[in-house]
Length: 275
Image 1 (cartoon, rainbow, N blue to C red):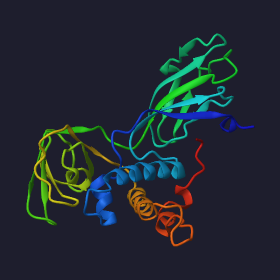
Image 2 (image 1 turned 60 degrees about the vertical axis):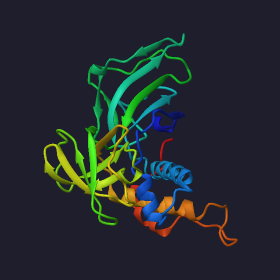
Image 3 (image 1 turned 135 degrees about the vertical axis):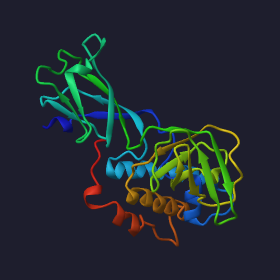
C-alpha cells in the first residue's frame, strides 16, 4: 500500500475571499438581465467552483486547508491534494496522549513547483503517535497574487461601452494583466477584467455588464488571478448548465455536463483528487 492510499481528510479552514467568476460575469454569460435569481446564480457559482476543484485538484482562488492524515509516510515527502501549493502554515502531530506538537519549519521544505512537503536530509517525520489522525497539515493552495486596495472607482460612458477607472496606489500591474476586482457595492464593477494601466496609481477596465454608478461603499481589492483561462471559461459553462437545468430532468431526459466543459477540462487537466 502506498502512503497516498491511506485515509486522509481535507477540510476548509479559511474559505476563499471571492470566486474566480463574479455574479455580473455569470449573468452576462447566461444572458440574465434581472436580479430575481441572483441568489441562485450565487449558489451556482459556488457549485461550479467546487466542481472544477474536484475535477482538476486545482484551487481557483487562494484557500486555507487542513489535511488530516492517519500516519506520516515512510517516504521523505508528502503530496498535498490541492494545487497550486502556495505555502504551509504548520505540520502538527498528536502523540498517544493526544498532545499536539508543531513540527519545526526548519525540518522541511515547501516545494511549490510539485505541491510537496519535503523533509530535509537531517530530519525525520514525527513518531510514537496515536493510531488515528496522527497529524494535521495546514496549507494554502491557490494561484492568486497578493491583494492590493482599490480606494476609488469612477465610471464613464454609456452601456455597453462603460469604462471604469480604479485608483490604487502602488498596484504594480501592467497593461494586459487579468485582475480580479472584488468587494464593490456595485455588482457590475466586480469580476475578472483586463486592465489598461494609466499610471502607478491608476488603471482602467471595461465594465462587464450593466450600468453601474461610481463605487461608494465597501472595501474593494484587486489581485492577479493567475488562473488558466480554460478553467474560468469552464466555470461559466457549468454555471449556465446549472441555471438552465435546475430540475433533475430536462424534456424527460437527463441532461449531462456540456460538451464544452468536457473539452476544456480533460486530458491532463482532469485528475482523481485525493479528497
